[in-house]
Image 1 (cartoon, rainbow, N blue to C red):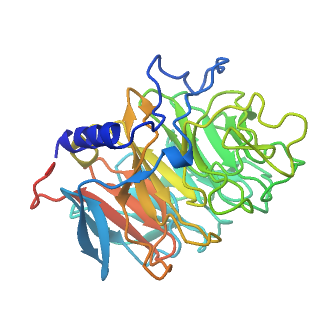
Image 2 (image 1 turned 135 degrees about the vertical axis):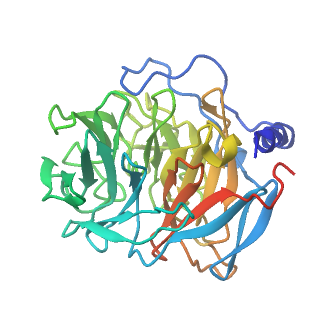
Length: 407
């Protein structure tokens, strides 16, 4: 596969979606370690101006269901019977690890023969408190539990008892904790709010924090994020996050967002949502004044969770620089939405504002679902893994050598 597919998509978007509010060109955004300039990232458009586009999708059969995927790709099952798999990570040998919060464990999923199917699932850590995400750094396996961040070293294939790196995290409400290491070697940690909308008593809530690798020097990085569930650095070292908007304001308000984080950025929660929607309960005197704007707005209640940037090796390079986002799916919308993986095209490091269905078919016609995407992990071989915490499996998206691409 080459970049023909994505180029055709961008042409389609520019012709068929007039006035979509695409991000403007210009200089690159400040790196995640820099103090933000007074200007905020460009706004990519409102929900009504950012429709979901379908282009060049085909039907494929997986686990007795029909999924839709771009031409030239295929979907298989990498692993199953994993409990409630959430976020994944690769060790320095390229072996996949996944967090299972329901089982309180971390699983190792080797694929030694390279056939695209995990050989087995082995517990490497157990007895954890809702582990949600993990990362490898400096020879350590870091795990974000709901109440702390811990790390463990491997010795002869066995991980030792974890040591606490960041203790005493606030618990309750949004329980998941996401960690990622930046190019600066610092540990970034997201902690969601304790409520739907409220004034928090702990300023670590609804925020992303930054620590040194040993857990020291902890400080707020970006705030006003109700639930910044997914964190990912792009190739230029900029930190991006998904954010889940509040409930109780209707089926289509407020939109879910993708945010470009920066030191000191305040995205407005609880008083402001998606950059320009004052909260009817917590506006206060400020409202949305001075709030950092989101980079992309998307359909409300889609529940965007994991995200990952495609690089030159991902799926043949056709989507290089663009962002894959897992929509976990709504739980309280009149007509269910989400339950899919979408692609957000980027041009010159900026999102176009469009949302493209990339892997769909998990939501059935009767409103039920058979899978809920959570984490996204590109692999060194160019394939992409997508975890499903409802079905206990991990899907694998790869090139289909039997089907012509870009057609």
